[in-house]
Length: 142
Figure 1 (cartoon, rainbow, N blue to C red):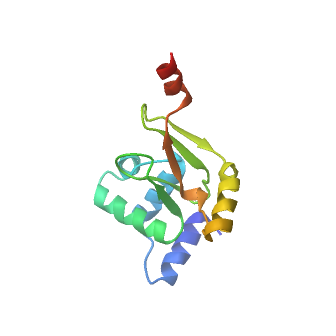
Figure 2: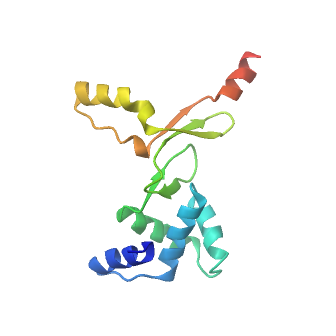
Figure 3: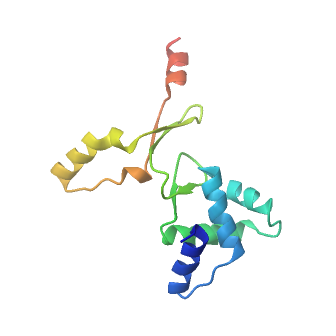
């Protein structure tokens, strides 16, 4: 079944209807990879100029409830949305704002320790770590 058909079916099962705006928002998130609601809105407005930021926020909330997108706070400001299948840990430099990505497996040892010692199941697919990137650290040391 196509993505559009799958979204339509999921919405129909919940008593909601498929709208072009919802599909455009989902397509924008998938196309952009990581995007704030404002970036999604600009992307959608390239196709449908009448779509406003309120519509985008509502669509993002619904798509997240349906498990099709996720949001992560990569620092200060608006959350960043990505498609569900887009899984990695974000490394956010609090000095320059650079965002890097590492595989979720990077945190396997920590996840196991948390599970063993605290009974806590880490969801590393929905995680951003804040720190200082290599370039900024080199500049500080220089």
